[in-house]
Image 1: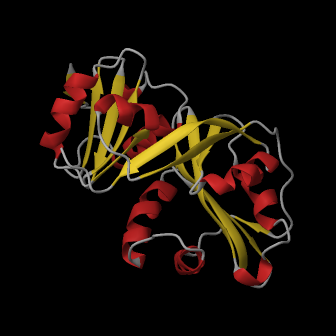
Image 2: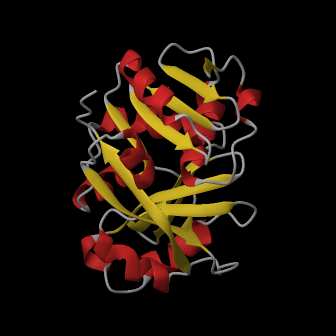
Image 3: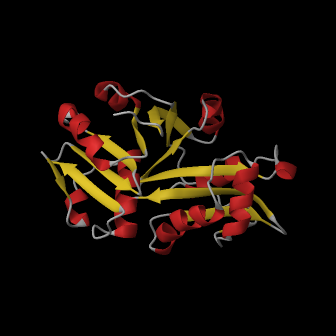
Length: 240
């Protein structure tokens, strides 16, 4: 039975998984006492977070999909992200989907000119130029800064005189981390900057995952030390 979590400790059962990384990182950043960040668990079978109506869902093997499908409309959700198979079992259409990869390449060498000093405007402008859908600058900062402050996210960049490439541990959860927002400035592409930065950003004490934005990026991440793990799916026009 789905139950609202009253403490972050109620999410300790979650395994090392990219969706669990998001859920537990949000819980670390916001706790369970904010009305815009809600957390639910279904015994030890499933869990979800709803942050400003954006839902991340993890379902284990024995999850009660019928109960979850019936519950989602009551959340007033704006978007849903989960494993592609979960979408299929819930009978919800996928608007976007692509590969999930897991880092298996071992400890990486620190890139030359590496920096972990986060300049929000600089990173935001680079990501927008790289084709990422970031929303407004204030929305970007409000989202990432809360997690950076409490260690539920981390920034990494390559910068000599200006930012040349960047990558994030977007969600540094209890047992796993989810990397993303990887891009290189136009004038520095083709130099292997991202391929050296991303492995270094993997958390060696946790399983580290990454959602490919497009299927065509799979080979790039395989060359960076990642292996295929599964597929993610998302719908930001959920009809329930």
